[in-house]
Image (cartoon, rainbow, N blue to C red):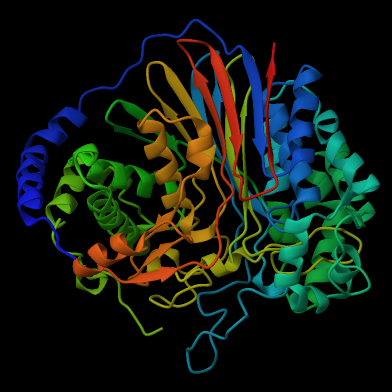
Length: 572
């Protein structure tokens, strides 16, 4: 196998010219002319058909995209307990059409006030396996219930009670187990069997339920009704809160009533960037997604990817991923606790410096990049996208971290708790459950939000709008990146959600990829450049996407074929 070095030399020269000129272009203001038209259709794409139907039900009842987001979020909590729930949290990226107002609603979980930096270390200072992933000690204080109340009250037009009605109905009547549920329940079977309440609700006779088995959740329905009737206080105070704290503490957790009573969402300014005429709007810390995505695109803006071979493109994109994930490990955490150089990390001049360290004829060894102190050393979430007839839009990624979270339900609540505490750096330089390393910026502290990779995103040009995101743990950012590159190439949403995926996260220093995505020839060429590989033996991710073609006023939506979700467009 031979690498075309003369071709690479020409690309290197063009790259250098772009490094000099490119950043100056990127600093120009990026303004779109006013759009007078509204979409010809509304669209909802989510990870489960019942949740998608719930969103359309609320839109048909006169609700806007924000009311529909409440309905979809709550219904996913019922029918996709492996991915999200009111025992977890997430980020909701909102765009209000009437005034072009955009905001990120941060409903990320918080560390309990009794948490401390060494919570998951033994007496010798080593991480105790499983302590940050199993049982109530692994659970942060949930943020999703507060986020749903906030979105309904501040941005919706329907009563919260009406938007939660579909989820309450499904929780009482039940939903049928499908192949995906069965597979994930099998994956987490031992953990679920370890808690009697979890096994009672989500298993059948303490074993994996058969396809078609009906899962009913009356306790969860009651908890959702308390939220619907009393708002924030219905979950964070009163009877529900007492049951949550009692159940957690009895099983060895450290929650307190003060933890629940003090929880509040935070509204944050989204991260914005630009890539070759595309405005990028994504989430800000405590998600690493927006900064990493903009960093990667700023690096790639100095290359002409379309003039490269496919292997050269993969190498270049991998090197950009590597550098953005290095910065993620070094700098990012909860902005209420640590100083994050967001402006620097998303600036084109900074990206130009990173670009200068990339060689097109050789891979950069991750351990040669400065900063992170290293030691030797699951993956579920959910996403939905919504566009309403007024042009309001929502991209939301929600999580309880691992499939079925901490596999723990406080008795009488129906609330499956998250294990998001594993997203902290239990010990700087030691990988978490997704192999991600972190520094002091993401160390555990009381009341702190753990760093996330969730990346709900809007992409917009003068004539096109994309709403997209996906679950997938540490691979979320790179999946959104690859989907965005499909959008940049003017491909339809079906291509964004179905394209083959590859990934690099700085450490471990390997290219991860889905089956059949890299050919043997491509692997051989990349290996000559110094890359190592780890094939993932299954497909990953579950992207949900919407496209609004403003020039033709057509709306398209797509749900990832890897999942069981549904994308429905309804003409007005």
